[in-house]
Length: 112
Length: 113
Image 1 (cartoon, rainbow over the protein chains, first blue to last red):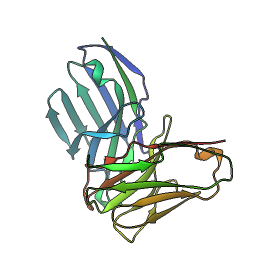
Image 2 (image 1 turned 135 degrees about the vertical axis):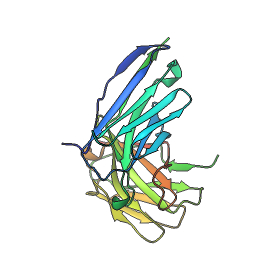
Image 3 (image 1 turned 90 degrees about the horizontal axis):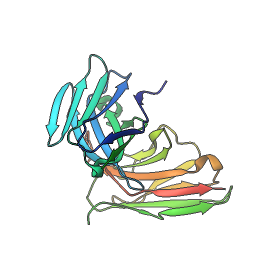
Image 4 (image 1 turned 90 degrees about the vertical axis):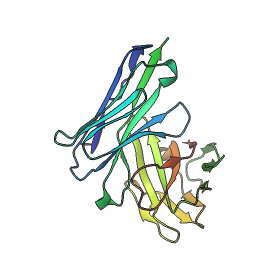
């Protein structure tokens, strides 16, 4: 079983819809939770990060962490065609030297 | 633009050939990483260098070697390429001790035939 599980999709939504992405994990030592966006044939870029449990909002993006359930989410409101990309969750623990452990990524397609 | 530069962008190798993937960053970061990305597998850590002069194995180090040439440069070497090493390779860097904010290069697409 992978340490971080993520539905591969693809997830296809109409423009303006809310996109909901999530990951589950098994390692309770994870403390930092990140979402990366990766456009086709590009490297991942950091979208948001959260420390421990709670919510964080940045414009159209909201990240949620529920450590008790070992479950993290990313919501994209008012989705745009430019949001079409692969979204990767990543996690790290100080005890492991802060190395990132990634989920498999979810491909999102926002149709005009 | 500041960031992580990887060369080459594409490469085709025959089984048994060797090659070195180059990575350089100009952000004065201490820590550098090599990942491989395969469909549905996310990114898996091959090797990393927490600081200049140190290197350590990651999750999937077999078949690879690394060299931290100086603070800016971190290379990945395939001594005898195998078809299982067909993948997209990403280099990343971050300030030592930072828990987020990794900067990734644009990747090297390697095919081993």
